[in-house]
Amino acid sequence: MVCFGHLLFKPEALSWLFILHNYMDLTDNIVDNPFIRPHINSAAATYDIAFDPEYMDLAVATSHLTGEKINRFTHIQQSRDDMVKKPKFLRAIGRKTGTCFQRCVGWDALNTVYSVSYEIDQKYGTDYHERVCNYVKYIQKNDLMVVGGMTDPKGDRGLPPHKQPDPDLFVHVVEKKEDGIIVRGAKAHQTGAANSHEILVMPTVSLKPEDKDYAVSFALPLDTPGITLIFGRQTNDERKLGTLDQGNPTYGVVGGEALVVFNDVFVPWERVFMLGETEFVGMLVERFATYHRHNYGACKVGVIDVLIGATALMADYNGVPKASHIKDKIIEMVYLNENMHATSLAAGYESRALPAGNYYPHTMYANITKQSITRYHYEICRLAHDITGGFIATLPSEKDLAHPVVGPMITKYFQATAGVPTLDRIKIGRLIENVTGGTSLVESMHGAGSPQAQRVMILRDANLEQLKKLAKDIVGIDEEE
Amino acid sequence: MKIGIKYCGGCNPVIDRKRLVKRLMRELPDDCVYEYFNLDNCDIVLVVNGCSLACAEAPSKENTITIAGCTIDGWTYPEKELADQLLARLSTT
Image 1 (cartoon, rainbow over the protein chains, first blue to last red):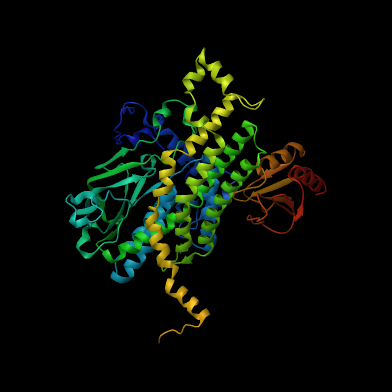
Image 2: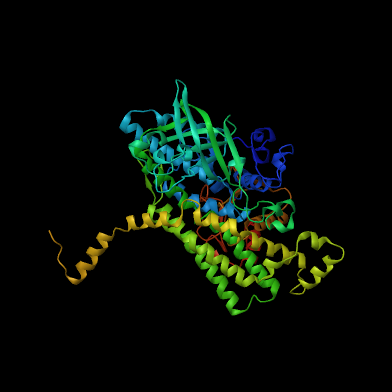
């Protein structure tokens, strides 16, 4: 295993980065730029944890391709045990970072393409799966961080890719050459893109034969010529210019998303994993979505563990930990959170092997898990706000706190229970504000697919005809032959 | 004495595993040696699980003490007594 740890992200590797808002100066050290640094720290936690004896039992796996010990984030799932360890592992890291650590999406992309490429080869006699295996070995050996490039900008959602007025709103092939292909388009909302090594691109919607040029999957280093990253803004991101007001100054909020633009980028054949096989795209999209939805009852549960702890601390600081309604609200937060983790574990325990041999979560339970996070996370944050009070919405800035005249006033008038430093109360308040803020919640709503996408799959897997038959059987309605 | 330490993955521990082990290290004789990786040749192995599920696998049943949440080899103790109980057992090893 190669350990990059905190040395992973070298400034020169980021020299291609375009960041289009005024607080970024490309002449500065980008790695230590306050807008990016927290996301780097969070991603680095996925490396550090694999060398910590306290977490190794989850963080390290054995490659089925090489027999070597590897970071679990590069592992191809080989068993139900792997699929149960996955949500446990993600929860463990979420509890340390209090935010997204960005690395699961590439892990899911690897497992998706590993499985689908095998099935394409069985039908067409192609060699995609061998290419994917070589790529996985490269990622495992070098312990690289991969972006799972799924979401296209999509333009007019009512039109398929080939009918869009602008043909580039879905990633597509513009030229086939002897040594590879040229691609154009973009992937939006790409978590961790600013501090990853590679991007593994996949189609984002089911395609018909007319959209053949859009049925393309490939992987590239993110510093390949022609790739531009446009870093996204976040709620209150100017606070990253300070410390205390960030709430989570070390690890930030969510994953540092970027729009990744491919402007006629060359992809060598050995990095092409699908090209024109439109009938496999629906399967690929569903596989990736299910793998990724499985995670949300894990990483987010770990983050919510931090939130519950912060909220309970705030109740202590405010002197109300024994109030029955406070206890009841904290119970509700725990109840909702553990529900989400339980369905994620269930999706792992009821996982199954795909034809390629790798394991795949139970689709119903994975979709239930993600659907729950789109609702319960909001409810948990509502309860946290209820318990914490308006304090987190009206706190003065850290500059005011440091001011010789008003600072002591803030310390005096924001004190609560005797013995608790006002600064500690402010720190926890800011953390709660951070974890329950806009960017964090929207990520839970739309990451791994918007709520309706899960509901479609829940309905499909509900098998209503079988359920109707159950009712008929009980009351004696005969089935028509 | 060579003491092996094997942690579970730490997804949702109900005890502070690190603090427990640090306390043992502080109070055990200075000539004790601790091993996290190669557990085969240890005099005794402490399998430190954060909860009663006890996910961590012991390398063998011999010379092993399994902590699983607030239990030691299945016997339940308050968390604050775990270290004393373990120190007592280790003193007879």
